[in-house]
Image (cartoon, rainbow, N blue to C red; front, side):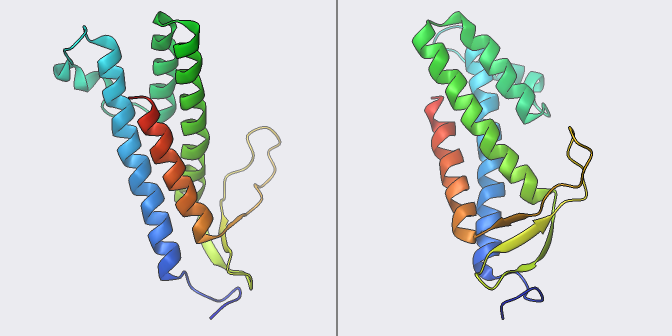
Length: 150
């Protein structure tokens, strides 16, 4: 069944689940990278986990960008690029996770609506209209960029 009254498909559930699970894994991966940055060479301070546990993803990325300043320009620029890409993709995760599914278009695109206003204009945000394939691609991209910090 397609159209505004259609429920979410299995493909959509799988895509959203993949994005949310990938974002969670990348969040933990970023936390581990912070521990690597603050640890001496060849040793990771796992006992410092409480420092990053519960830290917002954006804050973790900001901390990594700051810690990257200890490296040369080329490495630092690459780390900043990785963080920027991950932050943009994680924001897509947030758009979906904090929205309400309102139906599927005739073209098979899912529609998600949020009740949050745009922070700059105060106007209601436009609905996010996206295919399950696009959501899967975001998950894959987020995974790839997360691995780039290794």
